[in-house]
Length: 566
Ligand SMILES: O=c1ccn([C@@H]2O[C@H](COP(=O)(O)OP(=O)(O)O[C@H]3O[C@H](CO)[C@@H](O)[C@H](O)[C@H]3O)[C@@H](O)[C@H]2O)c(=O)[nH]1
Ligand SMILES: [Mn+2]
Image 1 (tube, rainbow, N blue to C red):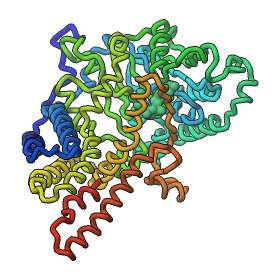
Image 2: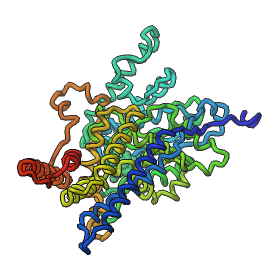
Image 3: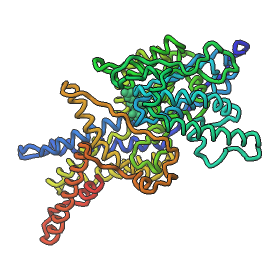
Image 4: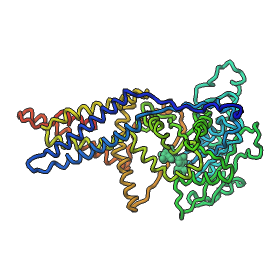
């Protein structure tokens, strides 16, 4: 037992070397400083008592801001570390392991199909951890009898699925992913396995059919367990709590399933429900009176654990320090399943998670991503409200603060147009432009993310910073001034595990494309594009005119490249 000798180390903090990157960091920084210095100098120099052009000031502000962001970014990435965990060493401390409450939130049976939530729950029920120390709570803000029914059916399936996964050491325990592979992962030589695999697959298909055919009104008419859903309006109903599986009385090692509890918290038009945060608070309170585990793990309904040992890995980090207070939560990196090839929408964040995530881990510990994060409940309560702060800090530090650049480049172009004879731009600006882009490109190569993905991310950064970030800024401004309320729209989820293998060819063709609708979110980037196209056309005309007339006042190559790049 553990007391018999010195406990084996559960985790190791491995510093990652990045000497060459540090030089690159400094190179970009010195170019930025040189640019700011020369901009400031030329502003001061502006002779004849004439006021310097206003856009020069704007450019200076943008460049200073960009330099500041770079400085923060650089600091965040400076000394990255990786944490290696040794879950096998926990085997001798099994009795000491703390209980864990697993939380899943879902909000809308249409946008978040119950089958998606069911898969998340199944992958959690099947994790490698002492079963009687686990309890899973599902919060349903949709107050949907279909979601409840789906979970009820899922329990029956789980009684077969969980032992199957553990017997055969299945790696991905979300059935929709597991069965989307062409055949059983193991060699066909194993007869028993093959038979079980085939029968599990057909059990799962039956489950899918039952859930997909479930119909709200006929479920409610069934009465019994469903009676409480009768007349329950989504935004106005009392709390519904249902224990779908209870292993508290039978806490033997043979027990196959963790407890599973369904909760649809009370809603009333008179009280704000605070979206996911509100749901999490209710989950914390309900679990406190039922199982009251010291640790909780929070997962959104469209996620699953891709590693059955995830809770054990987390324990290595939560218990692995001499002073346990030092570790308040563990953040698993988000990997996207069914993500499109080459990240056309720039939202897979692989490079950010690796570069900045490990960097921040080296400073003080990972930032809180809002999900996939086992944590001590006490700390959660304490810092719960500061999540926005942490997230905004993340955005501020993150490498994609290109927002500055989007404002930056056009203003620089304006400046350049007024004084095209000014020559410093050719030096510092070009070097900065090249070094900066090569730097971000190399980061993608380093993380083994394709060049295409880099390009797509560059594009999307321009679009998001000019659209959603700009509007988000305005929204926060309006909210702060008390002029409007923020609304949260749940994003649509589906459970296709391989988007590019579907047979709906028209839908496939549109997968990597942007869908434009009437949303005002598209106005700013479209306006910017038009302005730049006009600028290029006018510039081209002026360049041709200037060459023809022999007057040296046409725009330079820099202007064209910058306009095009933007
Ligand atoms: O009223 C609500 C609204 C949402 N949710 C749940 O909250 C989660 C996140 O909602 P989603 O629409 O998927 O938003 P995302 O933009 O994907 O959320 C990301 O960003 C959020 C805010 O930072 C984090 O909380 C999430 O974990 C993270 O996945 C989902 O499980 C929802 O079911 C609720 O429970 N109640
Ligand atoms: Mn989500």
